[in-house]
Image (cartoon, rainbow over the protein chains, first blue to last red):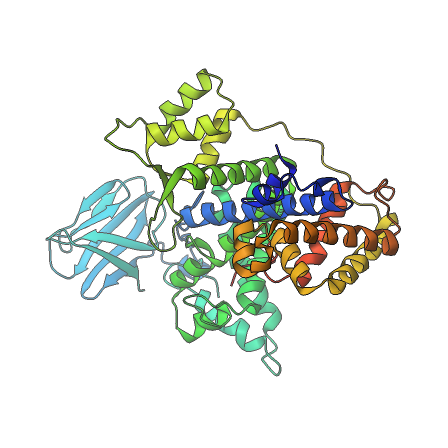
Length: 154
Length: 349
């Protein structure tokens, strides 16, 4: 392969046969060009994988449920409220399960917990077994199947 | 203060307290606010990085120290670096979070979890630097370069939309049956295919349009990653004096070049194609002009290096490899040549 090809597209076509490749210092220029091309490729490859989201998992860790010393007296599980507008769902952890109760909004919602769907009735607790930590937010589907995200409000 | 307590998300308040106390005349709580905020950064960066391999970390090694270092650099970037892109628009990320009244989730999204978050941008730059310096990863970068050159020659770009790299496809006259890429890979492995051109063309023919990085990973899987070489010895302090001499020589040589010769050397240091140079500097359209300029630049640089740094073209200074010399020369040139190719420095703007 012509040494000039190492400089990139087009250089060999113009410099082949010039005899300059044996001149002093030309090796240095060619090595410089090769290194520059490799660095540019490194940058382009990293950018491409970055834009494509290689290795990206956007999920946050679930919020840790922490019992404060001040809560110890009651012995009752801490209930937290998730809401989006009038739609409100109370949640607490009970014996390693997540207990959900609809407190406001139109009836007929379903809470989506990963692969599991938990339908709720107003004021009737529903239990999602094996979930021992409160999520940071709740995704629910309303009666018409519209997706809503309820944020932790209290 | 802790966002560990359910029902409270202290992150926005922590950011505000830190920024308020981190200015001249601010409250004396800077240290404790900074420490509490940094603690959050460490926690989230540890979680966010769990899916990444070694290549994306400082020195291409994923360990506690590297993850911690990343958390600290993300914190520093959020506190000090004014970023141009949305949603920062010329502000530091912390100032943006305060002024836009972002809630905790949004702060975490832009700092850690978004595909283009501050922490992931730093990782991208570390990965690019590793790709240019680590012997095995350099092989991957060179493979990407070869494949990109080939794609420009034989394929056409298929844009994927804003913010995404293009895919490439062969110009094809008809409908073809597609196969899963995994099946194509298995077939090429069985056939012990070693030719990059054949690997790329087979993938495009049988699996349809692909990005250049996907093709690089595919070719790497077929060819096998080379064995890791022994890490090169670091440049010895004893030759630090020589490095200074080389830096001085390169700077002097650059300053003495004519404008046209600077254009030529700049094109080489940017890894530019010849046509691009000619478009900017039509004088180099003529073979004689470009040949003479190449010879002149090479001679001039070697003469300066020999004179200033005590080098001659027959011998390298003791303890220095030719690659070290090239890296040093390039590092000086990137300081003086606009847009010369460099390893990235810090998070992108």
